[in-house]
Length: 442
Image 1 (cartoon, rainbow, N blue to C red):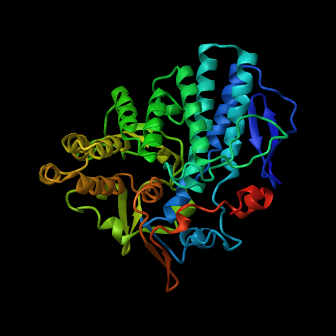
Image 2: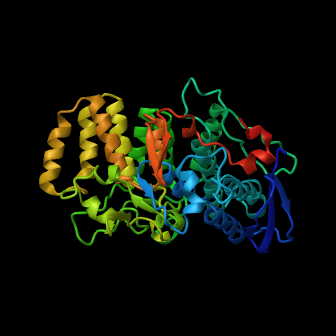
Image 3: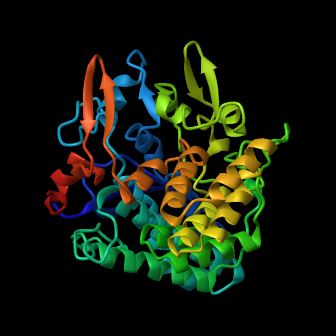
């Protein structure tokens, strides 16, 4: 079976609800109301945002950031994700998200295909259509990072992901190559750029795409493709719109990943859903990566509970996060270091560290960083990404695109090992997806 089946019911004008389904990518509309107005199409776009998967919560389980609580009530549903048992998981294990991405893409495709005809080329319609293009691009991008290898010249012809570009009951969903998949992502981003009207969204709708989000997204795409000059330009374009950071030396500062934070760019993805947050403790390796007395992130990110530490991030929609300014400063620093400009790399990294470290320690760290060559500086920037973006769903992607180190997870007295360069750094498609589309099987 090479199709994805969505059972769609239009519950009210312009608002779709997607029921659970047994097959994939075969769209069967069962309702009778067709979106006609800009409010209807905005409702479709909102449904695409609301249904976007919580995959980054599960990715944290695969990293070196957390330890699994063996006595948690949720342990049965997440332990095989924690143990990288993708090929033959326990039946109680939650599947890594797959079809959810295509649900959001479906809404986007419907908007792209119909909004001009129904509404016309108004400012509001252009904005909604731009968001639809970015939704389609971002969903395919996340699918690529989950289920395909990293982009490189050598990997360009390897299997990417199925591309869904139209609402067609008869289309066949064979995975495109990695190069073809990225080409489509970037083509959709270009279309979005030509239509986008909103420079930056208000905090109350920070889950919506904007020009600022587009630049941040471009920066991440180019970062993952090792296109340093392009990553640098895109990140700096986003920071030119708003380069603010929360100063954690100030008591009243918000958590940087709070949706009302001055550095928030896109507050979309759930990065620590309760079943993950409540079943994990912070790993010793992550805790020990901070200077506990001088790095203000330590006391803002973590809280001691008994003999362990738990996360203060996530568990509430106010901490949904996809992009924020700290990530951009780290991208700029990494790009400059990769391009051989270590002075600029240290300068940009220092902008972030000044807002995170106590003043005396900040001065010491800047002095040490200024003496590092490009190779060691890249190691320091990677360590800073680990500390700054902890538990926000990016660690797995950073490990995958770089060193792919060995990780050991212990469970009920047994050690389980993800070997260095383990093939499981590319996640296997969920079995239910493979069963319904053999093209996804290895």
